[in-house]
Amino acid sequence: MHPLVKLAKDTVEQYIQNKKIIGPPADPVPEMTAKTGVFVSLKKKGELRGCIGTFHSTTENIATEIIQNAISASTQDPRFPPVTKSELPVLEYSVDVLTEPEKIKSKKELNPRKYGVIVKSGDRKGLLLPDLEGVDTVDEQVSIASMKAGIYVGEDIELYRFEVKRYK
Image (cartoon, rainbow, N blue to C red):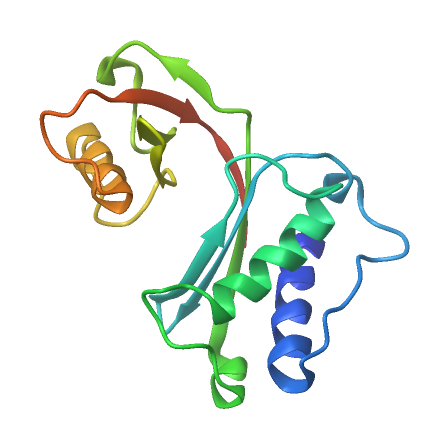
């Protein structure tokens, strides 16, 4: 198990079992020291169980970003009830480390396998990670990200793309 994934798993298990927020490792691997957006995803039997993340860094480094987002993914995702102790043995974890989002001119610059998308209208933003099962076209990707933000068809939008390094 990659150290980033192990940190997410250890964070969730300590928080759910003991309500304890662990600290970052004393000797972090190099991938934990940069500052950037991070998403933590939890799955149970292959189905999404929680996913929370940040577009940009909100903490001092990737390690603390993982800790914050792992707790949120397991307890604050509005689509799911909080994770229970009995679920811990069957959860699967992944961590996506995002590149800096870049503004693009059109959907032609997107590819749902390679790029995630951020759709923005006013102060509403919706994000969809790349390479998700069941999301095969750019239109599906933009539509889902728009729905997440409450942006309706026909509204003026700005598009941003980013890449991720996914750790499982």
